[in-house]
Length: 322
Image (tube, rainbow, N blue to C red; front, top):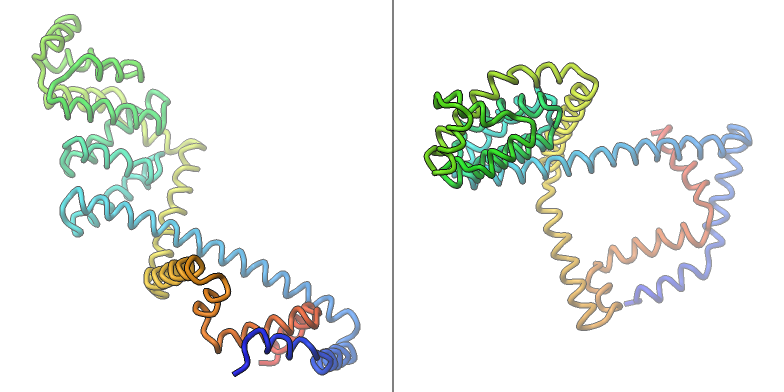
């Protein structure tokens, strides 16, 4: 049986018949449609190719968005101990993100931190609402959410209100000491003294802060959502969520995990064969013989004849006639 290299030599040695056929087709097209048709059809094909590339790019982005969503769902499944709870929780976060100036990725990051610090799933949305309103109220945006979330989370983890977390909140523009003092019915200096002695538990402190942020900053996210930045964030979030759902459908239709796994296994085997037996043997094992012949035929025609524009035009005509 001839090797691929031998076939390549044989096919590449004589392309005169192929050239004649293509030239004849070219003359027929020119006689039937005029001399400018080939140029026009080539431009049309290039334009269609550009559209196809754009659609392919959208598909890639959609699959990437779907992958991110699956990662989030997997993380919440581990945290909540149930796929069903995770799905419901993610939907809540998506709805929350859709009506706030914050994007889904920012909201999920904060939610993951709250869960990691010991908050329950039921506590997350109400706490996020207070934190989001406060962040919008002090003009810190996503950075504010991160800072306030971290401070509350550390407070919960320590089981006590401590000065370090209160300072973080104060530096973020939130009057944390006053909120705590109002909650426990003390003056600010008295509240500070109690905290220094470990006399305020985390549950009391977090409750005071959430209530205080709701009272002082309640509704700020809704106001910010109407601004240019807020509507832009909502638009981007809507696009990302839509892309994720499209990507999930694409993945399901084409069984992408199995395809990616197969490609990954093939590349791993290829690399191993290159290392042990060399590049030639790796290619021989990686590509089935019938596919090798197809590659040779296509490559020889395109490279040997070197008239890709005519090939594109002929393909276009065939599409029109079909």
